[in-house]
Image (cartoon, rainbow, N blue to C red; front, side, top):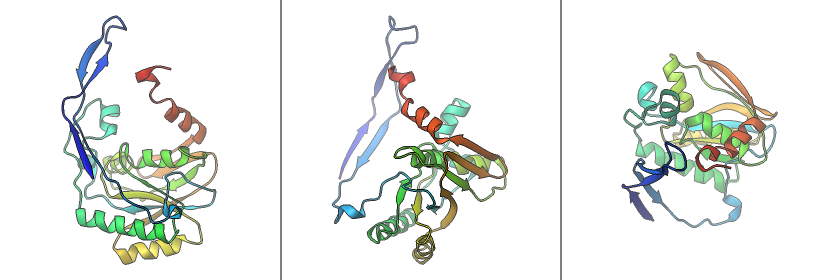
Length: 228
């Protein structure tokens, strides 16, 4: 294991055009990298959805809701134009239970895909599951929330200890049972298929976006920063 903490980063910006370069500080970026051994390549589980008709599940749960869950999130930066709030807390015991369960399921070959919820929250994780491999849509229905801010936090909050997984339809019940035995919250939230990512969540409503549009936006996300 190794660590790196870059506290004095800068980037070149051109507020007045190419003829006026300037330096601008960017946020500190603590980074930890871990390296391990995999007993068999067959146990490696990747992020993209693999086929039509698989069941999509959400493993784990957050330790907060509402504004706290949105603290320091991309949603605040992009939607509200500010970086604010205290980051969501982590329950290390719950995280350990989740990771042990994922390792067990991977070794059983019970998972078709697995992707952690991190930058951009659950909505972004689902987009990446649909677009980073062969494009496959999904129909997602999340449990209703008590308020709009809780619903926004459920979609875009970046609290840790949550993973989006998919499993074959005939394996989903077994995955749910093992999650219960491991003390890990597990919800069936949808299934793969079609050419759109559709997400429904009360009380904010629903959205439906074509996967090819999502992939094009994702593939071109750096053009505004580095150019074509």
